[in-house]
Image (tube, rainbow, N blue to C red; front, side):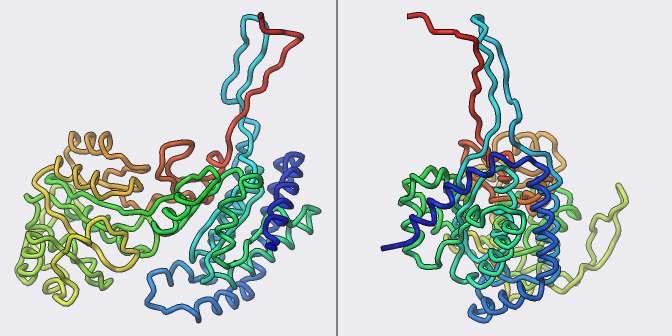
Length: 442
């Protein structure tokens, strides 16, 4: 018989001690944890190296799995940021007194026991613990088998720190790697209050179809950037490069560039920076023809940083490498690439761009590059996504970047939480009613 229900019951019981902790105690634990992460870099990287050795380096998730000294330092810094943030607990969201004297308060409280299923990314182990602990939640973690050694090393550090502070290690439980453990978790409604899948679309759909536990979706990021007829060329090239190449394997990375037909002549310059990163382009018929036939050797007018100044100059290369340029097939739209690949769609106007995003987007992050304020306003108002940008990279869709310290994931649904999920999103509320003998009339 499986031991998992016993462990889940222990998590539920251990979670009750969190209600008695004040914020200074929570912060002290988190700061100790950040310190221990820095002291344990060698052990963490050794464990991570074992995971990496078992994975093909060409796998799109290889980068997600990889830890470095710098990344561990950044993870520790995120834990410290979480500790520095105000507690989300006990906030009075609403208060009123009824005519009969009954005093009502609506206050923030923890969700309870939060389960997170995730793939490949050992940093999620740390993020989930830090955010759940700060917000008063016990947590159950189900990492992917590809990160088994890394996750185990991080969980050991967490358990050691909890016990050093006199707290039960059962506040955090890492499920076994077997798929059967996931199936047991999805039915454990008596022990788990909410379950959050963070990973591929296949994982999210599996949890949606099988879970008996209330679920918050952190959906796949099928991300678009629309370059409008009024878009600034220099700004556009910079944003497209950053959104696509900063990190390929993250959910906020750019998948499809949509370009207004009137600006196709600028497309070669918009994508030129991608060539240095060996990004494969899958372009529709019009975009492919322009890029394939572009003469990057001729002198062209391009905008520079000084307002209103145009300068004659030769672009950076002699054309986009043909071995990286392909004609798009239908499957290249609505695909989360998670790799050095991008598709390009040509549209006649903003309406077509909005329609394309509505059809293929995943309601994660979308952006417009434009000077026309009317186009910007329409885009911001009409695009249905968790985060919508004007003249900025979608790479900013991240809890730490939003000043939340870290994130559980990016929620793409509309109930309870949307966008980066951090401390406030890991709480719910309850009503407190204080009276002095009031009874409701029959």
